[in-house]
Length: 523
Image 1 (cartoon, rainbow, N blue to C red):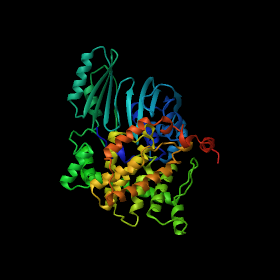
Image 2 (tube, rainbow, N blue to C red):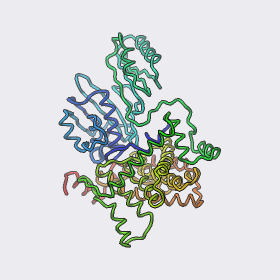
Image 3 (cartoon, rainbow, N blue to C red):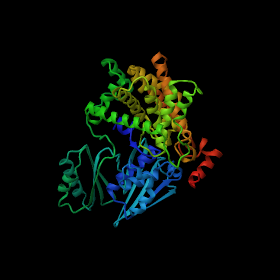
Image 4 (cartoon, rainbow, N blue to C red):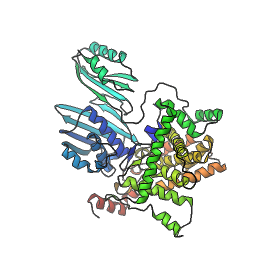
């Protein structure tokens, strides 16, 4: 399925330091909870020694997100910071181990749950920006992304024809997007039916009399947008989109609305309403950040007010960039204090898009509809990046987070000022070109340093690239080719520079001292 603006690019609305660690882990936990309640059982979580999670699962919120999801807590619940206490209070016996099991992805969760004489095994991965995939359930090679209602029916039978008949019955008597049958060994079967509406009541009726059925589960979606719309998309590439734009005189926001409506099967007003809510969340987060945030377990304190105070005192050059710096910093401070933020496209780059668009709009426009369209335009650029590559720094370094965010912001700013789709694409290309090769080397296992500086770099780069595009500068390299180049660079980047804490600034003497200090709770 092609990426969704709301599933894959702008969102989730969340608490926590990292979307690929905290939010994704929470979604994994929330899905697993619907298969087997973990309370009063035993949970073993393993991370691959060579992956990103082995060194970051505590500091970047993977443990917090997973436990909160397993316990059924909302990602917006402020009590998730007490995840260890809550696990004990709710009878959740959970252990985290770093082992060598040769995972195929750096963000892999290997989870075993023992409960009520039942045992479940899962392999799940975080694919970036809060997106997930459960690809193994008790040995069955499933593909669960959280964007459907998933009905699972597990059977044990010596008669293959009996299960085939059951499968055909379920397939023929339900309205679904996809029906799959998996077989393991001689007598184990799993039926997986993906649908846009819950089917558990209907399937329970159909299962009556089938004694080979051992259990049935329904998994509700954890993503805001459901998949399974069987309609052709208006375009599948940037070149196809530009033909449509030129033929119909459409700007990038109009193209984004058209795309998401067809992708999600929703009306234009619904798309606009969903994005407006996100924009208002970002606006509130900026306000909260500027007012000041406190949190013990972080490196940087409240600084977002400093830049404008310095400007008022004539200690620095006056520039619209200062507002962008202030707003970007405010958003990053809310993230680092466990406040509510929007991952756009990730939590680690969550200050960039909002800081660039709201910072530039300050004194220019406060029209919420105009701002909403700017964010929609930005989201469509992210769709092309997600479709070709990833937002996971564990795979491609910070170029896929702050670099991608900068490209999105540049397109959004072109939309804000009234530019064309072509000008927005050109601005995105220049912005991304400027940040190719950006590494991910967080200090002390916290998404603060040098993340704040890279968010500000991306936000100010977005404004520069916008102005260059609107002035008529030639980007030379088309955006789709720049995305391909970003993937090539990411594939050749050493793992030590891809959010593992094993290279760059992460291993400087000061970073090591800070890590020890924070780990032991020292002031």
